[in-house]
Image (cartoon, rainbow, N blue to C red; front, side, top):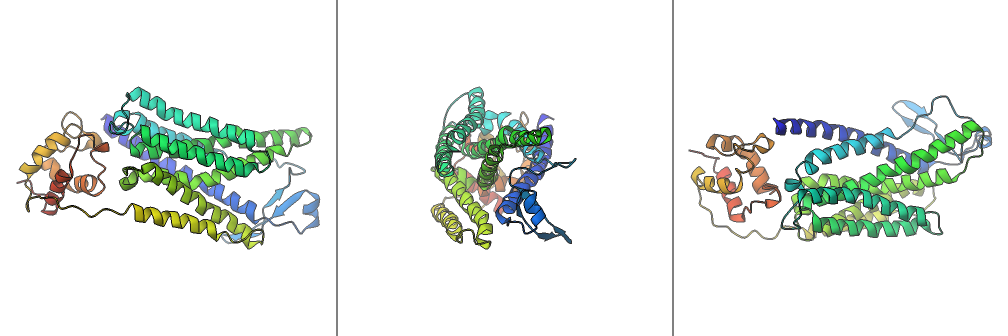
Length: 398
């Protein structure tokens, strides 16, 4: 029953997480586009009101005219919409998913004895430390260098180094699948913390000053904009890290940390192309195609590098019987898929049960090689070949 309820919790939380993440990323992308597409106002009244940019747009059968004030509007409306629950909901649902999946069963998901041997409690503490320490270091870099001369470039370079070090360290401590997801969660935590600790508090200070009739310090807007821009470059790397658990050829590679860094770099470069593309259309900067080209080149290089080696022939019988598989299943599978423990409600300790899950077994054991998790039971290539031949032969159990 516990496994069944955990599966439902995983499904509902994952559904929620995707929905709110779409809302957060969508609003983030829209406001980056909006900021990059604003042009100086033409209306004299708008200029007098302190409007620094405007945009005319058409969507869904209607015309829209958003404007941006240089520091603050002359008067606040009664209703002011705040963009923060999208961020908080994404992080909370994502952390809940991480909790019921990876932290709930650290011995299965976090720890790979072939990578690093430590206790479940230590692995959980280490995973949580990644989230906290990365934020503290990233935030310190931004606070120290963010407002200095060429601050954006300095911050960008140091954050890149920090992410690379974290990616390498995670893959040296955790199972590959967990390491990739943990690096994504680490960056996503910094993104949401940017909203919680800097963007929203700064906006609240500005609103309070306007209502009290006090002068508005433009530093709050500058800091919020800086963190918001960081968030948009973090987005595509985080999305790759979250999706990577479906593609074992990335995180199971001996140099998986280089793959992770390469994919995240490609995502950030491609995002830079789209950010600067709006400015190019208005004549503010050169065409940003080199960024897109750099991202594509990295992706193509990874595709070539990770191409599968020629498969060495494994001697297997033309027809594999259930009796031949039974020994392998008893040694490699039933400890998690037997009567005592029915992981994912899948049992493989009888001919009928094995045949019922034949398609899933073939997909997980032969195609994706996700099972056994982290190959904890040492399933060999010859044994995987037996599963493949048995499935292709009709999954017979007689």
